[in-house]
Image (cartoon, rainbow, N blue to C red):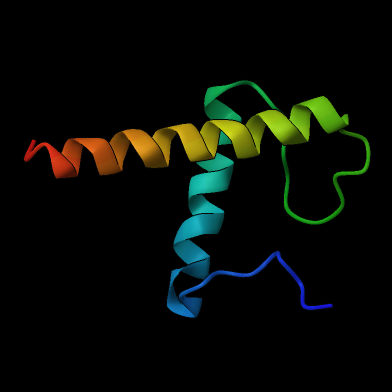
Length: 66
């Protein structure tokens, strides 16, 4: 089974990582590089969910010409 944790565009990996830490900081999740096993599933899931929300909002703005 192929890993689902990869960027579709490999060149975007660094930008996605920066975005992940930016979002975690915004919502108060103490995400750090390396091991994050001390975080709850809820905390980790909230980072991913908020990332998706922000990406959808950005795409909607782009599609609306703003």
